[in-house]
Image (cartoon, rainbow, N blue to C red; front, side, top):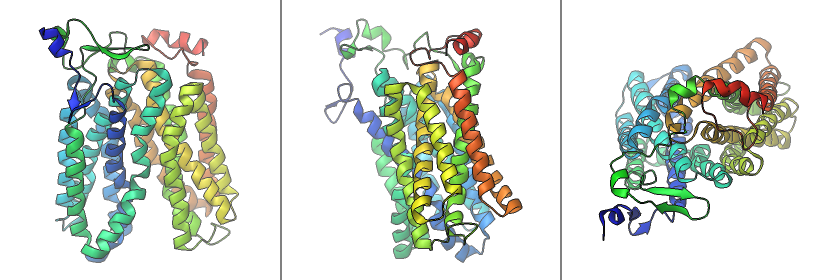
Length: 449
């Protein structure tokens, strides 16, 4: 057997051919995003922490805010290492940090300690594992248009439902063992799950090539190609080239305009559902919790669903649709006077929110190519989710304080979502015309949209 043939043997894990079973990588992304999405259930720890240390709410939630902000930054910075060296090493480093964050959080005695462990360390860990095992990984394994959107949606599904899974488990753990032991147990779960994923994830072998007819197949000259760390398509844009393209910046702006309202609603919905009329609906805490669950479930379901839509209609049309759905859902919240109406509005907010988080990496991959997508989308994510996460909740809170009503912030967010839909219809390239080369082609892309 020749050296070339040896290099062409498919990667395996426990005897399973990973090339023929590439769907495994989307499932690995799902479990990775599930572990990271658990961070959204931080509110479960708030009361036990405040009871022990006497902290006030604004201070306690600082750890979560820092975690999300650091996550957004690392998505961009960490993407460089994923694109250059492959996903395994950045993922393993991120996994170690996620485990360490839980172990160290179990030992904290100060607010600064919590911000450092649950905020900074966990944020870095989530950023590295997420950028390694979800979008960049799935985009490379699924180059075909009709499957890429759905499989990316599956990979990021866990981030939508992570809190839904973690919250009841953490609540039970805190009741049975206390919050410190619950953090330790979470670290153990992270170690096992993320350790298994780290042993499997990899980009497609550089000595393999994809064709629509035969799928992934070994190529000749594998011994030479194997020397490369990561396969690169010379037609794909680098981060520097993407920065010169107006569509890079517009994708971040559009993402921000759509996700702004979703992040505002996430932060305000529980208070809105529980507030007495006419400010809110006046639901009992247990009933209000079901509204949040409806949003969380549909946040998860929206990711593969909108990914599937993008495969059928194209990412541009799907992005227009998800922005209009977001606007509609926020308007429904302003006219809600019953449990049924607010549940419908919350479900549609979640469905749209999850869709936006799935569709933006999809259209970015189609426009700029998968070779450098980890770093390119990482910064798009920071523009949209990072700043949306900062301004959405804060603006919503400020407007409620000044007006005494949730109508104004929700209607403002709905207007921004409509703006995103209109601009997307005008600026994003049409289905089949997404691929970009250089910044000077932006005007041509817009004119042919």
